Length: 234
Image 1 (cartoon, rainbow, N blue to C red):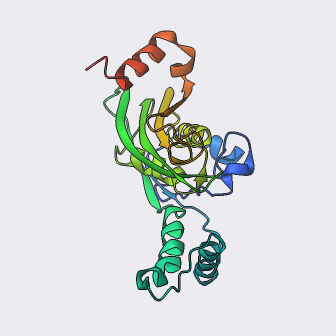
Image 2 (tube, rainbow, N blue to C red):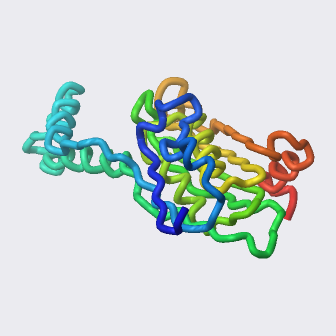
């Protein structure tokens, strides 16, 4: 496998199997020696019709009793267009290179990046949920450029999601690309489908976790991870 190898993560990954398995992880790639390089992370963007989305936005407003063409409220005229553009942006992952390096120093302790911004859309109500992710891994032969951990979180967040699936997909992507000894992901988020409607629980937040490898199987390593995430260790 050369440093120019490309692996694609697809929006369709969500339905490929229950854990959001990566299309790129085939039997062939699983047998490939672990080597540093740049894996291009791409998302198959479905065909989008912003003109139709804008028209649907105008119909949506009208169906709820808001006239976007009300002459007394001229600023509403472009609201359907802004609505369509905003949702297209929120549902479009940005491509990036998942850059890995040889672990030449033999670093064998946990790498943790905390408080990664999470911004996604609830697939049940099309309303945002926002919060933070804490991502950790125990290196083996590879280490990753630290900026790629927020990138992989954003990659899976920029689509209609559930928090549970998002958490699993981030963990499984790191396992597939890094082959580490362990991975831990915690996502803490506030869901506007709970805070703005329904029960309107203003201060409620949801926490999900996914553990892989030794972070799941070894109690001491798992405890260290949660202590680092919760700020008990410095």
